[in-house]
Each structure stands twice: as structure tokens, then as C-alpha cells.
Image 1: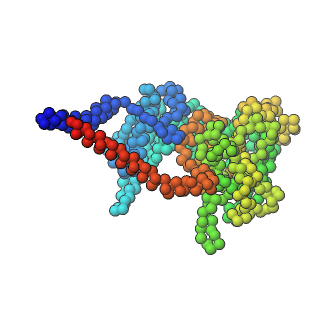
Image 2: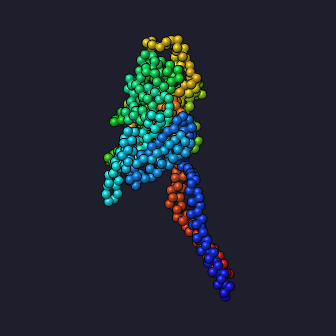
Length: 541
């Protein structure tokens, strides 16, 4: 009896020792690995991993930079996570900078010298609104970053989210270290429409200036030209100015509506552009006077029904250009850096593009609608063309097929004036006229309305990303596109068949219960076996 009692005591001691040893080992392991940082980024777009463009910018630093983080210690609870994420990101910059990136954390709230420095660097004191079920509190503090390089500095005044932080930081570093700021010209004498706030966002990265073309050359000289939603024709002399700009290495982004739309009456008419569309057609891309409707992928908009009630419906003439669920059509081109990382674009009343077959080798399709699309040509459909939902052509069948809405002309390109008489009135030296280029860069989108402020704010901020990606690819560094595009968060649901939808619906209804029951049965079985095994061991002791 005494022997059995001793065995039981030893068994109990071993059991208790195992219970105590496990947490002790875990604590010891935590202490040992604390100095080491191991990160595993499981996000789809590697949101928390610094991109190759950032790494290259840091490798190419000739002099050290300083990242000063101005965050108050006393901030609302919802900003604490943002502060920690910010410190993690700048810590990665410091690690990859290998001595060329210095990070300083300052609290201007409790340090008058730091407050004065923040003000001099453009980091303001901001109000924080905190609300709960009991009260609303207003406090103030700092939540910004300043990047300093030699005698220059770039502020990120308010960090309200870290989604764009890597892009903003890398962009600030590059702006401080680059030798030349790309200059973008904006023609303004043809009814072009670029919202002032959108222009302000572009000016954060580029130098923007208005240009004239009426002398047959671009004045003043710029690196690229952005044409947004013109409504008046370009003369032959202005066409020649754009043509020679491209032949001499300049880059062009043309966002053109083939129709004009009265958004109050919801009617459309042909946009009598001429000139500019003729120039692009000579390069191989024709902007058609039509309206694309997509019955498979469309933006939802609110409309009033007959009884005056509002209802959200898919508005087919606002197609959403997406990555298709299967390789059935191009959608957003997954193989080109301008569109590869985008999730979706919303194009209000876009026009289709026709690519001339003999120019297809120099043209890449960047975006096209789904196979259930149709393009209604306004020259034959009658004008004005009604755009309210009930009057639109049906697209619930096969449609007329995919419609190209964005394309890139690149590589070798002949002048639109090759073999033609030159226009009168230009001031350029005829001996310097070029009739071809080996490095063309012309991006065409069949919509100029898609970067309107209302569209960007309410429906698709990625529309602006497309323009930024195009400018990056044509004028600077295409690798920055990967950073810019990783900030995109709009992930539209892919279309499924009725059978797939039913399977998903019933799976959601019953799947959870089945899994819980199965897990419970497995747990009961494991517990019974463990209990039986413990009883046997205890009795044998």
C-alpha cells in the first residue's frame, strides 16, 4: 500500500511539474527572442512590407536623412494604434537605411522646443474629437512627420491613417533628394476641366503649369502633358505642337470624353472635338462618340422610383472595370504596372476606344469592360441620347463584347504629319521637325469625368491612382506604382452564377452550425479518450 501511495505522489508531482514547466519555458523563450524582430506580412498586397522602390531610394541616398515623428503621448485611444504603426514603419526605414536614416521621436505637447520645431517644419497642432455614449471630448495635440535632408524638409502634417504612409514617406524622400521635379503642362484653352483640389494633389508630386500650343510648339517646355476632358477642337497647329512634343520624347496622358453629358437632364450628345481625336487616331487609337454600358459590372447609384422612393441600382453606363474572376477578358490589365495593382475603376459615361489593327504591336490595352457590354454610337442612335436607367439598352444578355476604355501607346511611333504638309503658323525650325520616335508614351482613357472630385470621393479613389500610375510610369519610376497601388482598398465582389450564389447562401446559413457540431463531437471524443487514458494510468500507479 505504501508503494502505491508513493507512486501516486510521484505521478502527481510529475503532472504538476509539467504544468509549471510549460509557462516557465514560454517566459524564457520570450526573454531570449525579445531582441530579435520577426515579421510575417500576410496581407494580400504586402501592406506592411517596404517595397523595392523604397529600398532602392534608401540605397541610393548620398547623405543621411532624418525622420522626425511628432506624436503627442496623450492622444485619443483610436489614434494609439496609428502611432504604433507609424513608429513601426519608420523603424523599418531606419533598419533598411543602414545608418543613413535617423529617426527621432518628439512630443511637442510637453516640450516647447519640440513644439517650436514642429511649427517651423509645417507640423500643426490639431484638434482630436473623441466621443462615446456618455460624452464628447475635444483635445489637441500633434500627429505628424517631417523628413529632413541637408537644408531641406518635407512635412506630412497629419497622420490620420497609415495606409498611404510608405508612399508618402518615400515620395517625400525622393522629392528632397531628386535633382529635378517633373514638369506637367496643362492645356486650358479647349474647355479642359481639372478640379482645383485634384490639381492640388498632383502638385504635391509634380510641377504643374498651364501651356499654350497655338505657335506649333509647347510653351513653356515641360516633361509631360495632361489633357483632361476637353470640349473644343484642337487646331492643326496645336495638333502639330503635340505631335512634335511626343516625337521629341515628351509624354502625353489624354483623358477624353467622346460625348458631352448633361448630368441634370441625363442626356448625352457627341463631343465635337476633332483635331485631338484625329491626332490620336493617327497613332492608332480612336476615341469613339459612344457610351459604354456594362450589364455585368456596374457602379450602384441611387435613383428615385415612380412612387418617389430612392433605390440603389447598378447604373450600367457607369461601368466598373475590374480584374475578372477568370481569364475571360482583360479587365484591368494584370501584366502592366500601371493597372496590375489596381482593384477597380469607376468610369462615368465612358467612350470606347478602337485600336487600329496595324498599330496593335505598339499599343497595350490597360482596361476593358466585361463581355456583357455594349457601346451605343450617338451619331446613329440620335441626339440627345437619354441616359436615365429605364431608357438604356438592355445588357443582361451577351452584349456586343468587351469594350476597350484605356490604352497605352508606346515604343516606335511615326508622326501624324509624316508625308503630309506641315500646318501654317508654327514657329519651330523646319529642320528640327521629327517624323518618328523610338520612345513614345501616350496614355488614352475614354473618360475625362472619371477624375472629378465627386467621383473620387464618393465612388472610386483608385481613379486618381490610375492617373498617378500613368505619370509615374511615363515620367519617373514605374516601381513607385507598386507602393501607390498597395494603398487601394476597394475590392469589389466577383460575379457568381445563381447556383454559386445559392451554395454560398446556404453554406453561410448551415455551414457554421455543422462545423460547431463537428468540432464538438471531435472534442467530446478526444476528451473521453484522454479521461480513459488518465484513469488507466492512475489505477496502474
